[in-house]
Every structure is written in C-alpha cells, then in structure tokens.
Image 1 (spheres, rainbow, N blue to C red):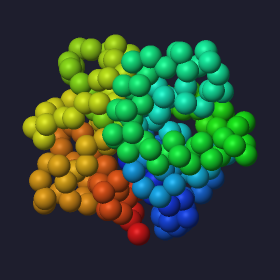
Image 2 (cartoon, one colour):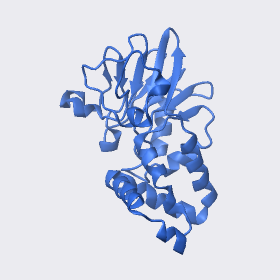
Image 3 (cartoon, rainbow, N blue to C red):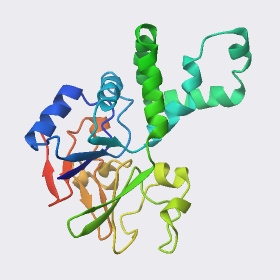
Length: 235
C-alpha cells in the first residue's frame, strides 16, 4: 500500500505513529510526506526529522519550509570573525524571512541538538539536501505526481523536470485550475481552509489534483491518504 500525507508542521511524532498504526501501516507499505514537517508547533518537527533518518519506507518530498531552513544552514557554522563578516544582507534577509514563517522554533531545537549531537544535525541537513522536489508513482491503474505545492506556470506540454523549484514548492493552484488529465497530482502547501470554511480540516479533490494539507499547522488533525483506494485515515 502507498500512503501520502503533508504539512505536519511539528505534529507530535507519537501521535503520528498512532495514525500510522490506525492505517495498519507496515514495513511492506510506503509513505510519502509531501513536505513541511517542520516549524510552527511542538519541537518544530526535529524529532520527526530524526525519525525520518531511520525510515527506509518513508520518503520526504521537499517543502518550502525545509527549503527555507536549508537557506539558513549557515547558522550552524562555527562563529568566527570570518563567519560574522560573511553575515551579509542577503543572509540576514533569508534568516528574517524564515523566522517570520515560523522557523524560530525549529532553529531553537536544532541548535540545542547541535550542542550534544552535531553529527545528527549534519545528517538532517544532508537528508534535506537529498530530498526530491517531486515523485512520480503508479498505484494500481492510477498514475500520481506527488509534489509539495503544485505546478506553478503549468503547461500540459511542459516536462516535470522543467519546472523550477519555486514552481513546485511555492505555487497555490486555484480551485478551477487543471493539471494533467491523465495524472493525479497530489499536493499540500495551501491549507484547504484557505479555499473556504467548508473545506476546513478536509481534503479537497478536484478533477486533476488532490490537496491533502488539511491545516495541521493551524490545529487540525492530519489526514493520511491511501493512494490504492483513496481511503482517508485520521485520529
């Protein structure tokens, strides 16, 4: 069985494991997390990142929050005269933007972890650098494109590899926007409640795409979607 979930934003790892248990997720199954496991709540997703390092059947797809963290990885460098001099305006703006988007929590916990286990922080950053921007999978008779945010500047004749990272991790499709008619695009990034209060805490399914960001970063319980039969699991 193939599962997908998105935008956990610091959701407690123990609760997440209970959700997997509810779905009877096993070592024979595979889970795709469509980005944004970090920031905003709890420990900022640091425990989740440590867990992901050890999971052979779970794949994180890069989200915009992970990308923002990577743009600020210079904060883990040793403080020297050279590193202070290298703190230019661009780096200050990157850090300010990340903090504004809820990154202060994750950075705080990662800094603490860096004091006791810098190798773990290094492994986490390497893991995020290796995270793909999208995955194409076939489940049963359906072809799926799994991506964090959608397909910005979409064209049906455009190769997926031709989309920029910004297109894939920052775009927000309109409800009436259509993607590939022979591929189901599964995405997150935009909490479904932003499309209207009637979608609060619910998955949105359109003709060509499914949004599974149900607003966990804003207090909603996440929904785990099984791609084999589109069954939804929630605590």
